[in-house]
Amino acid sequence: MYKYCKTSQSAARQCHIVSCLLEMLHTHHYDQITVQDLCKKAEVPRKSFYRYFECKQDVLLAAIDFYIQDYESFRLPGTGPGVLRTTESELTRFLTYTQKNKGTFEALTRSDLLGYALNMVTQSSLLSNVARRLMTHKEDEALYRVKNAFLCYGIYSVVGIWVTNGCQESVEEMARILTQILTEPFYVPLDATNQ
Image 1: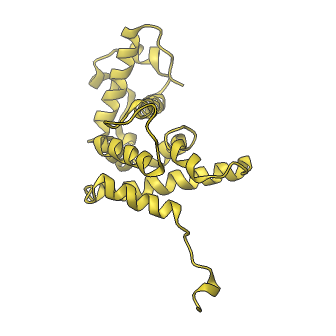
Image 2: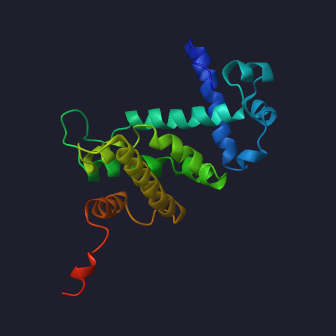
Image 3: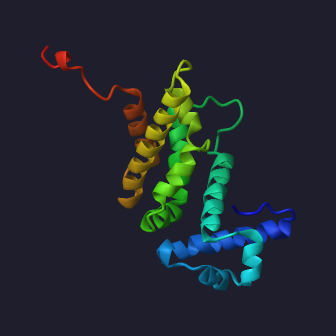
């Protein structure tokens, strides 16, 4: 686990190491990056690295946590307290943020880390505003967890294809398509096809 920083100087140094890992992921597979490589890139002694992190995986964990925290504070112009939030507006916010940070998304995908990141995201509140709108209040905990995972992995899969294809559709078009997929039935009952 990465360590909590008590001073702004320590927090800045920790963020710098995280930023260096993300930068390195643009050109290297995660498995190819060593702590020594990361220390060299960040220009910090190995001893300083271990002051903030126990291992390289902790840097990745911190990067995903920082990404989630950054997203939670991200707002589109004209939105904020008192503005009605809908499934489509929450998806627009998520897609806009992803498009602005598509390099990180692509780097995680290239290093086969998107599944790891998704596991953390499903446990966070990243898409909880969308999930809450699509689930009933009467669902038990197990059903909620499965639906939340299905929702997060499904949205991320579609967004991954969208990013990989160069974000050809606009954010608004993708938000509309995802909203339609999430709010309309997935199937037509068998006896309805005979009518």
